[in-house]
Image (cartoon, rainbow, N blue to C red; front, side, top):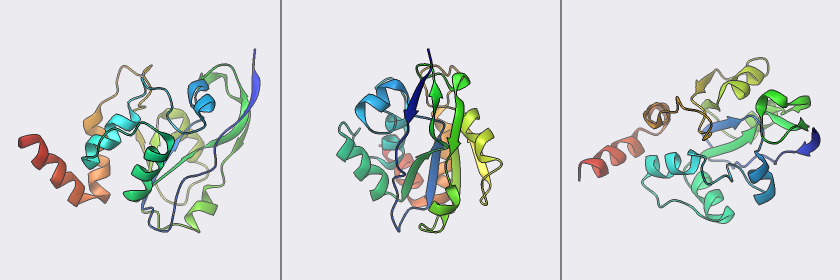
Length: 168
């Protein structure tokens, strides 16, 4: 049975250079009250490994990780009717006003975490987006190196540090 659910406010500040857009928070994320709350989701592992940071455990640590590295988070769907966490069950969605965020942060790059986010953004975005492999545990085609390559285009110093730490 579908339920009406609300997403989260965007996480960004005046230093945010990359916007990572998801589709809509999972049941577990909605329960936790923050993005990518399912511990099986590979998002936080991917991001912390790219920046060479410890895996964040609390909402405060997650917020500090993204803001400390110039990353903004938001979902393309701000509210909808949804069954569980399934993107394909989303109905009656309200779509995020990403233009608002572009007016308040120096976003250079938009990375869409999965096909649903990318499809919804295609009609709304002034900045071209890249469709990234979903970090969801349900995605068997996830590849962390694709994410790292996209992030390295905006954060080359972090990419060099990450490669150095892998060799050491």
